[in-house]
Image 1: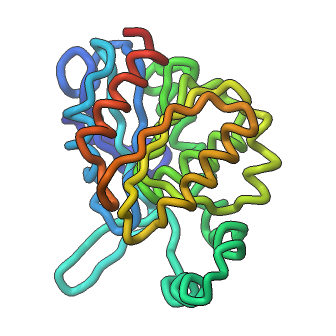
Image 2 (image 1 turned 45 degrees about the vertical axis):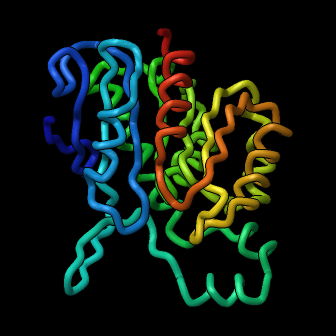
Length: 238
């Protein structure tokens, strides 16, 4: 694993010809979730089975979270009190329609990161898959819907529906884009049915969605790993 800094974001680079990102193989960029350490998804990348030579890039979110016995990163802050208030009042439409404060700034940082990664690593967008877990998956999707680069595909692991009105307007512009989507039926943090709504939105807009529901919680189980591996083989060329 090699560590580098691109557009101000620290990142881990793995895979390729030497395990540290060497070569000119396809690139998979995976964004960790809220509160996770920067290298949280490195273990997931290590068990995926993409085409030979594929490189993996794991950026660290710009916001640092520090507690007494915990340190992690975040792409934007979450107002947990407001979220719980909306959930307890079953005001799910407001929850889905709201655009999180800080999402635009996170998208700007990620866009600059992807631009520099393409230049530095000689990774054209048509051979790049963007994705992430939870908050990272939401940012990956938001960026893909608003940025015109011709990505090879998206991997969305346990996201939820936010910015629903904006995404519904933007999604038809990405018709045909391959998307891998997974979610646990017992997810205690991000309700399963909200991700089903996200799936319906993407399918209705013409995106090519591969869907893996699984029996489990907020996680990346073997079923999702197998599904994502098959997806990478399809969009990057087995």
